[in-house]
Image 1 (cartoon, rainbow, N blue to C red):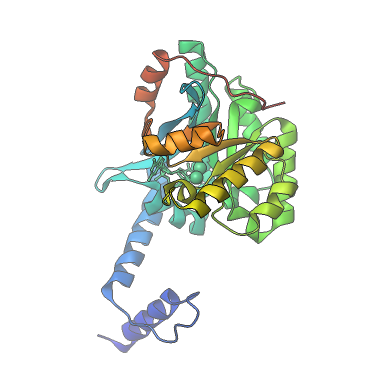
Image 2: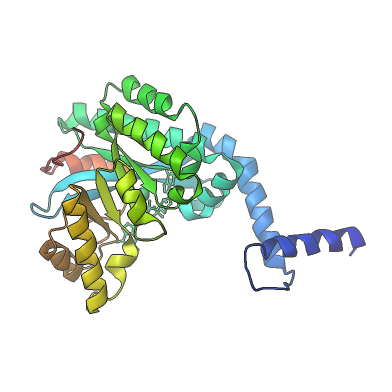
Amino acid sequence: IPVTSMCDRAILAANAAKGHYGKSYTYYDDSIRKRLVFEQRITDEMNNALAKNQFKIYLQPKYDLVTERISGAEALVRWIHPELGYMPPGDFIPIFERNGFITELDIFVWDKTCELIAEWKSKTNKLLPVSVNVSRKDIYKDDLPEILINIITKHNLEPKNLHLEITETAYTEDSQQLIDVVTKLKKLGFVIEMDDFGNGYSSLNMLSELPIDILKLDMKFIQTNNKQNNTKNIMSFVIGLAQWMNLLVVAEGVETKEQVEALKKLNCNYVQGYYFARPMIAKKFTEMLLNSEITEMFNIGK
Ligand code: C2E
Ligand code: CA
Ligand code: CA
């Protein structure tokens, strides 16, 4: 191959090793090129995909642990690609976070989610709060509060109907900015959920500085072997801490009856996981909602 291509490939290989400390050499192989070609394809197609409605909102219910009834839901995006088929968010969200498209996609997801909340309100007379994911990139958008308020107003809803999930990774970069933005959103009436709690650094610091309403326990807490006393103790401590701080707790990734029983014993408030329901298309969720009683989420949106 030409020397210029050799150099390109050497650079690709070197870039792929960035951030891996202690690794002083690296090899080029075709997987690196394939990944880049894939990333380029995703980037080339994303705008058209949004315009052509290829992104779909899936919903996963959250259940009240006392009544075992639906109390809320989380909106999760999927890309139904005309050639590649069903694509989970893990395949494209990280790329969109790098190239900046994530905010455009998130705004689309927030808008569609509010449209659904409003639709259920009129069809089923049930006002179910739904949480959406807020990427760390969105936080740095100066007009984020206005964007969210405009969407809420457009659909005749109130900010408390939309919960905002913020991940811990967002906390590490510029925490003051995050605190300011989240405080503003909270003042406007949005309900703030801290996502993936326990899967990062600085969680305890941030817990005291951010105006959070709901703590979402990271899946790893639930999925590590619960028989181990340490995990149990940590879970019980975290849930106790949340209660002491007047926060509601959602456990994510609940897959077994044993996990449900253990969480009930710890007085966890809500669960979200395959044990009760997988994320599903909006139509199916609407049908399910028509045929079920809901339990209102308490103590929030005040
Ligand atoms: P997340 O916000 O932590 O979402 C929870 C993930 O756990 C979802 O994966 C959900 O399908 C999965 N899950 C739920 N219950 C269970 C269970 O019982 N067991 C297991 N093993 N998994 C379960 P999903 O839908 O693939 O989403 C992955 C991540 O992509 C999300 O993690 C979120 O960070 C991101 N994401 C999804 N939709 C959006 C979006 O619209 N905007 C942004 N910015 N990020 C999104
Ligand atoms: Ca989430
Ligand atoms: Ca999560």
